[in-house]
Length: 189
Image (cartoon, rainbow, N blue to C red; front, side, top):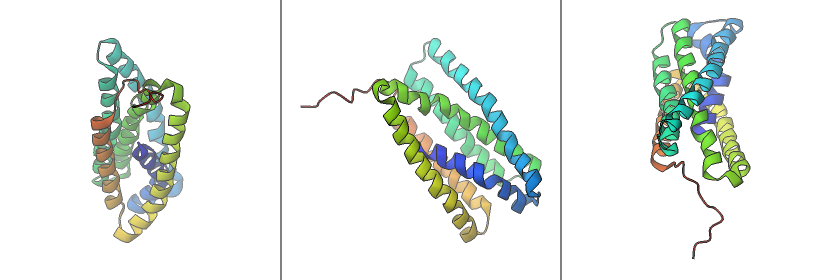
């Protein structure tokens, strides 16, 4: 789940510089190209929550519903970041970025609520651990992005690497996640 925060913070911190260096958009306007996606994220997150609840009410088990939401929240940005690498104009790049950030919001109806379902008595601890790990990954990812871009000489390689990490995180979540309650207090003989 650390990929969520790593991808989130890298996009948040590097996109104005990306628009400036790739499309030669001045930083004042680049901030607008970078800000629009976050507005869409608010709307899409609400839609994702409604859809997730609808899936569960229709009889789909919680585990599958969470995996669907998390898959959209990881695979969507992964594919959108690939599209972003091919964008020829700042408007098209902003559209890809908006799609990536908007679809990422579906993960709020995936792993974030999943923590409450698998161990409600430890939700705070689990969320704290998850957030700490994600924040550390975001720090490393944000600093590492600068080194990576300088080393490779372009943003494309870093966007593709971030995309790959989203795909691997989706695979990990699909294989190992559950919506079933886990009893951490049970002692094993």
